Length: 251
Image 1 (spheres, helix red, strand yellow):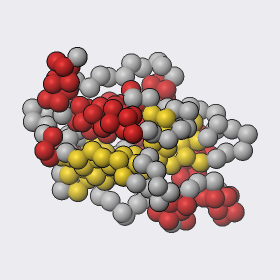
Image 2 (spheres, helix red, strand yellow):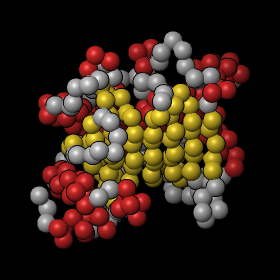
Image 3 (cartoon, helix red, strand yellow):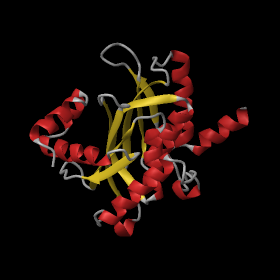
Image 4 (cartoon, helix red, strand yellow):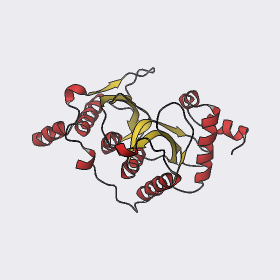
């Protein structure tokens, strides 16, 4: 395990919100997972957390546009559902910024919901993610397997930008019904809109999803009013295929 000084240095490289959300024990485990990545494209490890039911995993990789969508795709391909998630970016001396994303997951299969993740499953997730990042695996498209026969309607879904403390509107808030593969659908829609997710919080409460994505344009600039509308429509379309069909027929 890293030394206490190394853990504190690791914590200082991450945003204040991260340090508020995790105790030193969890931070030490995240630090260990990050250190074990070495030169690999990504590393995945489990850590103890009593915050949420389900298995807590930490994913560490070089930050890049579309990373959350790629991680979400790996989770779907490995048969895992996301209960909650938080995404952070840390500064590393003389290196590309590093993403540290934390997920609380469960098996998608109802029969396996009470089973904990095994070491073999974590290793499979790691290799799947690395394969996607390196382009050696083809990302499974969102198809009928991840879209149930009934999906949240527009009346059950809220997609809006909210004002931050500094007065800008860089936080996208999504509230909708839960379904398998939803985080993948949302993160892919944002990537297709060419925006960068610089932080996120994902929470599921009684089959309702409450997500917040802190986003910028790829060049780091703020999201303008016209672009906000485009992004909202794209996210709604990703959530509800009915809206997508209506959008396509209007083109």
